[in-house]
Length: 454
Ligand code: AMP
Ligand code: ZN
Image (cartoon, rainbow, N blue to C red; front, side):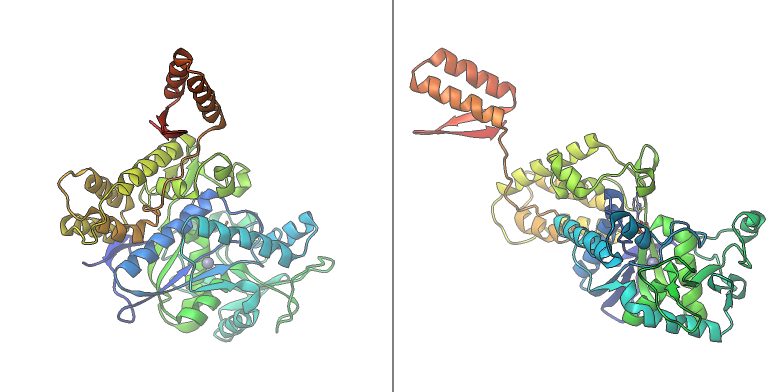
């Protein structure tokens, strides 16, 4: 079955054709590790995880590179403001390296909790300074750069195709240029290398042909994807906020340097929204996976929740929505735990599931097929079919459900046991009713009792 993917570049679903038969290179724009990644960020990585899982399901050998931004990402997209890493280090009285490793480790733990498969390469910006300098030198040689008092800039007017991904109107942007232009020649020009300022006391800076400084944020992705995946890559993913600036700039740098097409398929995930707006660190209203766990949810409840919307559609965050996802996942696992272990697969249902996942990763559709299958009393080989489906869902559907009995229920059941031992049947019945009103049932054994959910 042909895999169709929506390509932001063409604004169309296209049949996926890899550069090399049977192999796929995927570059995913990763985190800036100066703070916790919130559940919005993680929606983006669940999307790229589903993509790589579908590619593997379709028997492709996947090489995925995810960058880790530990320098150069400024608080403003207009090439000024502070370096996010330096700012966090100063605030937390730590070294930039301590900050980046601390938040990266938590990010990686979230990957494990969410069943997001690890990429083939985690590629750190500070470990590729040499490659970034080489790329800037190449651009300089080809005449795509100019120098200002604060850095080396990419001259977007020299790159004819600038704006092709976002289809933004550069003329319109030029109208507002007095506000942020400063020494830039055009509002869309961007920093490739920034000079360390006198008295800035940066922790992270390097010597370069242009003076001491650090790379701009965008250049790392071009340099590292070229290093690990070649001049032209199959698929590049990221959040939709990257389309107009970061990815546009990645294209300009890469194609200007190599003269080749940078990416064949651009894929972007839509936002997790809070109150109609993107969940963002800057708003202060964010949630992390650990916070969801503290509220009694499993990280996989959140993974299931994200499958309620297609990856290109915004998803509204709500606790009620997550509760519904948790209940559905629990119900699914309970039904699955009672299935006969038939190892064969059901062609009809698996075929319909494959149609959904290969249709631009339609996970809500795939989930609907799974539910139809578990509800179909006549369907054969449910167990083996669901096992296969879970290669893509990654929901641990065969995991035993752990039933956590609240302390209050345990106490009532103990009291009831005592009443029974004292042959106080009226009290024992009364307590049974109270327990059942709270959604639990007591199953009496020979000596002790067991508790179960109703
Ligand atoms: P950052 O660490 O801020 O560079 O973001 C990491 C990734 O998360 C990027 O691909 C962003 O596009 C993505 N992202 C940020 N906010 C959201 C959100 N609310 N929903 C989905 N993805 C997001
Ligand atoms: Zn990037």
